[in-house]
Structures are given as structure tokens and as C-alpha cells.
Length: 163
Length: 266
Image (cartoon, rainbow over all chains, first blue to last red; front, side):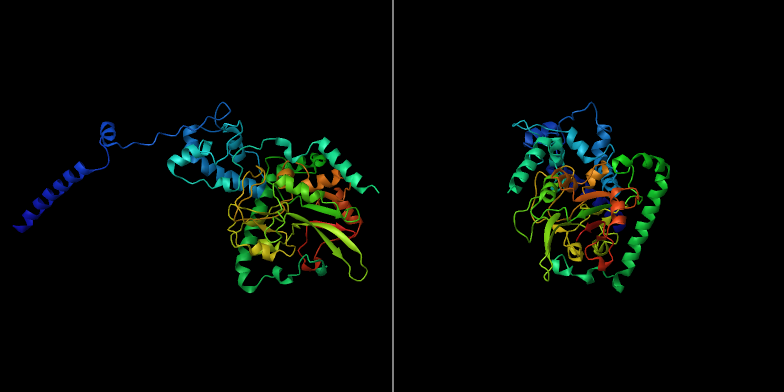
């Protein structure tokens, strides 16, 4: 007899607990309830569009796999010197520029930065920019000084050498 | 040469009995990696013949191979004592700054003055990573972050560097430094960040683009032409011909590291 009673009592308690959980659950059943309860969901991020016509791969695919391909490209670049490729970070940064109020490209310190818009939303920390530049280099030839600068510096050097 | 203060840690390049299994594994890996790239590049042999005007660099987009061994020859008779152009060019190119704290400053390249105590003769020489063929920094690295590229350039893969600084201690040239502070606005072609070790990359980004290192360019621009960059494996290159023609020195040649940076008139 006891054996038949037990399942029934278990079922009752399960039903009761389901009802209780249902009524006190913090997960809203509908958007109306959300509004009533005053719970606000964060707005979905709207990352800035890149400069080109389209990304190097479909957007949905890039959202999911960008880190995999970036990692692959970085190993090729660092270890074998292959710098050409669609998935280099420098290329991403050059294309996905967000201008700040001063007209310059924003760095990752700004919440409007392309990478940060999604990463802040998803609460995923980006380590890349501890070492890498988070905005394009402003004057591309800065590493190669202008001829005028060379001549001026050479002249200065020679003047210093003169007796 | 030990009196010049460049380093006297002869025991750094040793390979103790306990470390031999690790070394073997790494060497096997490097060997297989080299073999792979050589096979993959066999069709490009003809391409290389036409690339001579371009310092015989690997075509862009192709993995580097052991066909090249990049090196520097520095003629100290042409290197002016008071000239610092190579150092400042390196700093500009790679975005590092020295703030005068010798214990923590970035040390990609520096001018060292050596003196013969008997004769009083002095020489001023730029010292940077010597890009050894058997680099002690690679031997000691516990993560494989310190590595030698197929074309002989010794680099730090900062993605896997844990900042232990073993390589800094192993380097007999004191050519590596550690980044102690958070950095901002690095150069896109020269990523550098807190917690990693760095050193001269021989301007690897420029070499891959067929250019010469910034220090060499600056030396030419300053009118000294004391530095020559080129392929030590190519007998036709200027550097190989100079090395064959004149007596040149490797710093601490006694360590048998076979450095890629050679000095003339030392």
C-alpha cells in the first residue's frame, strides 16, 4: 500500500512546487509583464558600419567566428611572416573606424569603439588592445620621415659638426 | 670583449641535462616546420631570382623560408661616436620611448662605448638583438613565445609570452626588456604591451614588405652608411661579399651563437 501512496504524494508536491516557482519566477512570461515589473532589458548593440561595401565575410559568420580567424591569421603573421590575408586585425581596425567628437578615430577607451559596442553588451573582455593599436595610424608615412625632415636634420647635424 | 659590459654570462647558453627533453622536442618541431615551408615554397624558386632588387625578400603573402638569413653588418669606422640616429629611428618606428630609467626602459637598440684600457682606444657601437642562429633566449623560454623565424629573425610571440623574463636573463647581449607599464597608442605594425618581453625585431614588418630596417635607413640618411642590411645566405648580396672580403666580428663569438649582426673594425 505504501508503495502506491508515495508516487501520488510526490506528484502533488512536484505540482505545488511548479506552481510556486511559476508565480514567483523573476523570468517574465511576456514583455508586458516585464514593463510592469520595471525590468528593462539592455538594448541590442548597434555596432558602427565599416567603411567598405561589405565585410570580408558575412556579418553573422563574423559575429560568431571572428576570434577564430583572427587567431589563425595572427599565428601565420607572427611565425611565418604572412601579412596578407582577409582576417588581419589591422584591416578590421582600419575599416571599422568610429569618429569621435574631435573628428579623430576613437580608441577602445571610448564605449562607441566598434569592438566595444558588442563586447560591453556581452560582457566579454577584449585583450587585443593591451598591445595592439585600437585605431588606425593617423599618418601612414610617419615611420618613413619626409625628405624635408631628413634634410633639415642632416643640416642640423652637419652644423653641429662644423668647427 | 667582456670588459665592454655587454655581458659575460657564458653559462646562459648551456643546455643542462634536465632541460634536454624539452630542447629536443622544440628542435624537432622547428625542423619539421622548416621542412614544411621549404616543400610548400618549392615552386617559388624562380620568383626569388627576380626579387633581388628587393633585398631578395620573400614575396608578400608567402611564408618565410630558411633560404634567407637576414643580417646586419655594422662598420664601426663609419659609426660616429656622437651619432644616435639609429636609436632614435628605432624609437620612432616602433613607438618606444626611453625615459631615462635604465632598469625599466625599453631596450631595442642602444649605443655602447667600449674602451681598450691599455691603449685608450674607444669604439661606439650600436647593440641590439643579435639574431643568433642558436639563440639562448629560445632555449630557455618555457612557453615557446621566444622563437626564431625560418629566416633567422628572433622574435617574441607576445600572444604566448607570460612575462617570466627568463629570456632576458639568458641573453648575453642584454638585448631584451620588459614592459612594466600600461601603454597606449602603439604603432599598428609594432604591438607592444604590459607584461611581455620585447626586443629588436629587425623591423620584421618592413622586411616582410621588402624594405630595410629603420636603423639602417636612418644611418644612410645621416650620411654615415655604417650599417648594411642583407641576406647572409645569398653570396651575391653586399653583406655576404663584405663579410667574405673583410674580417668581421661577432660580439661574444666565444659563445658560439652565430649572430646575425656582425661588426667590422671592432
